[in-house]
Structures are given as C-alpha cells and as structure tokens.
Length: 387
Image 1 (cartoon, rainbow, N blue to C red):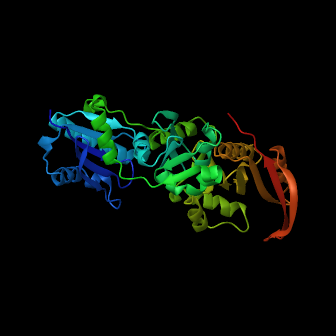
Image 2: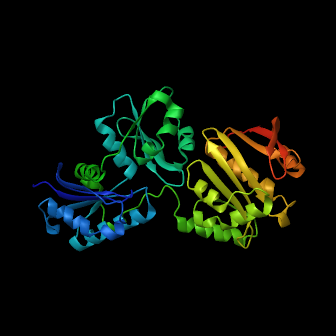
Image 3: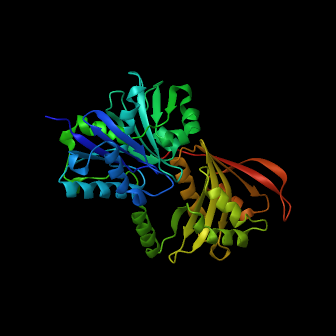
C-alpha cells in the first residue's frame, strides 16, 4: 500500500503553518503571514502548499488540523477550512491538540529525566499550559491562567527539570526562571504543521468525519463571557470585571478625574492597560455604568494597589469593600501572597476601609502627596491562598 498523502494545518497562533507529507516524509512546509488574518489567506494557501509538494487536492488521503487551544477566531477559521476540504474530497481528519503537538515537537531536545511544559500565549496576560512526562503522557491537564498562577497550580516534583516550549514560554521567560531558576529550559517553538502531519501519519486511527472534530477550548469564548456580563447586570448586583481593552477606559478616566485632584490621564491608563503587569478592575451597576475601579500591579508574588475610587454619589454602600475583596481574590489566583498600598494620612474613610480588610501600617512617607500636600501611610497585608 502506498504511503498516505497528508495535509496539515495550524491556525491556533497568529501566523500558523501548513505542511504536506507523504507518510513520514515532509514534502512541503510554510509559515503563515502574521500580518494577514487566517481568513484572508485560507483556503488559497492550503492549495499552494499542496502544489509545492507536487500534488493535487485529488491526491490527498488524509487531513490533519490543530484543534486548539488558541485564538478562537483563528481556530474556527482553520477547522472550517479543513472541514470544507474534507467534505469536498470525502476525507477524514485527525484533530491534534496544539499543546500535545508542542510537546511532541520538544522530543528532539528533551532528556529522559526532563518534564515538558507547553505554554501558548493566551494574550490578556495569560498562557494556555499543560505539563507532560518525558514519554508524552499528560501530567497536568490544559489550563488557562497567569504564568505565575499556572506554575503554582502545578504539582511539580521537587527539583524536577522542565523544558518549556511555545510562544507563551518565550514571552514569559522571566516569570519561568524567577520561579524555577536553572531547573527550566525555554526553547523556541518550531512550525507545528509538520509535527501535526507526523502525528496523523502515526495515528491514522484517530481520524474522524469532519463534523466530529471537537475544538479544545481551555478558556471560555468571549461571547459567553459577554453574555454572563449582561446577565450579571440584569441581576441587580454590582458586576466585577477586568478592563482589558483601551476602548473601555473612558468611564474609568472620567471617574478618576471626578475623584482625584491630580488624576491619571486617559492616555496614561491606556498605556498601562496594555502591559502584562498593570491591571484595571471595575464594578458596574445594573445599568452597566462604572461605579468603582481599582488600578494595580501584580509583580511576582506581590499585589501593588495604585488607585481605588468609588463614585462620590455611591459611597458608603460597601462598593469599595466588594471591589477590594474581588481584586485581592484575583491577585491570589495570580500568585500574589502579599499586598501593599499608600493612602493619604488625612483620608480617614479609606484608612478605615483598608483596616477592615486587614491592612496594617508599615510606615509613613512625609510629603508624598501634593494638591493638597499630605503624608502617605504605607500599608501591607499578608494574603492567604484560596482553594
């Protein structure tokens, strides 16, 4: 029997890749153009790769596709393109987890005693991660979270050496080494389509009909999160959420200006919200209006609270307490174990709030504030890990 001709596609990252193989032999491989969307490039690029391999669509025997996690839009486009080709040619498809493919790609550099951590950049300061034994079996199932939270959630054997692979590992190299030191080795990810083609060649029994492809969604789609936000507003309870897009900062900037004599500008907020360290959280009322917000940093195991503000017309209603409890919980989930902030010495309501939350005075900074001049009281709080 002649070897299978296999076409493989990965659209779970911005660029993605395509590969054509005959059996275990790679015939063609190409990286996608990250400056264009997958929707703009497919399915034309699929056929170009087939042509480069010296084949036609009629020569294909099996298809393979990265099933996620990754960009929701990219994943849907890739799976749809492969499904369309599969239906047209009467072919089956091998769907391969992107994290599994990364683990397989690390095979050439791994050692028997090393574990393999696959980290994809999930954007929003998060990674999609999974942990594998050296033989490829899963040690920790796929999760989404901040780099520190993922590392702290894994049950890593003491002194275990770990190879990290993926664009998330490259982006968060410093977070990895700060936690694991020289126990960790970070490597650049290769094009994944050739690895996906090899997996399909080795496991043709995994092939399914095109309508049976099941995408791997580690994080819930944005549409579901938006629906939950709407339902939260309808419930009448203040809705807590993290601001991630610059376009959502108008209300935060307006409330900042209403509450402070020396406010951050919208441009300052926009610049900071696009970093991995800075976080902006808000409380919204039942109509969706921002009634309180907090800007903060999560740096390794410390939460630094920069600004807390409540709509002047909504104070003394427990909103500040609810907001800070939610912020602290998010920080703990991200790996924070201590929290600190400065508060005006004359701001008695704020000092009472922080005292009720368990913050204690650790020092004073004379003349720290201006407009008007005031001392800063430095507060700290030890945070407890929550299950």
